[in-house]
Length: 301
Image 1 (cartoon, one colour):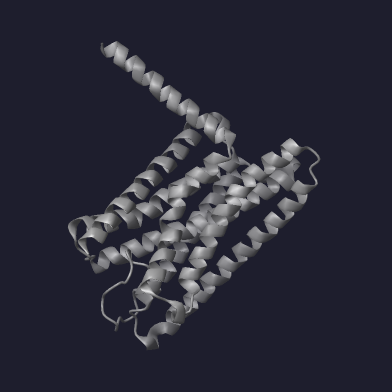
Image 2 (cartoon, one colour):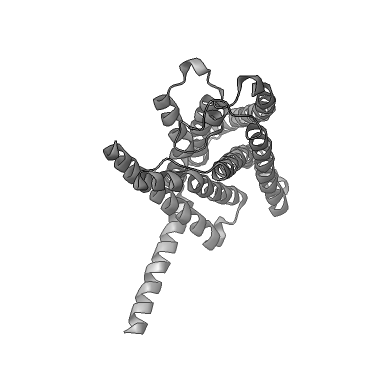
């Protein structure tokens, strides 16, 4: 229906612009304010870059298809989109794991924070997260796009999602991709256990803090990250590991939107709402831009 296509167009366009604005402001604030040049915000900068990349990989093509009333994507473009999206969300998952480690060291071992999370260590951990995401994407993309497709060429999703492409493969070729999926699931589960254990130790340490102000500050930095991790892990796990018996086009669409479109749009809001340093940095950036605009206007006049 053309009306639903236009609704999809305006809805996704609004979400995409909100993600661009929110993540762009976060990146600008962290890059411009030297007070935010710390490990916590360095990893948040990486998260915002990954969010921008992941939503820009899928949503613009979907918006264009809705606007021009088409559903076509070439095989090469589909493979590229699947690879880039898997690379970026895998790297984002590893960055979220590193961020949990950062919060654990900051709260449970504050005296060792500068030693364990120096600038070189932060760069190495971020590079490892990006590298692991790239390796995971290469393995999955090479595996899935080398399978013979026997079920047609219609991907029942608004982007080239790996589980939907997997449904098109011949049944006797499943084992090859299942092996790769098992390896990736083991790494993902290991990261999940690490995050859970880290937050278990964090909450134990926080509850021992006698000062209510410090207790509030610790929770204000941990709860947003925990909310992002919970939404991301639950939706991605359901999308990639759900049994075929409970799969349906509408359910698959909702789950895909929840893990591919919603997090990049709401992450900047979640991290800025409860973080006064981010708010102050954004205020400085916007005030500086406003004053520069006034000066330029007066000088031109």
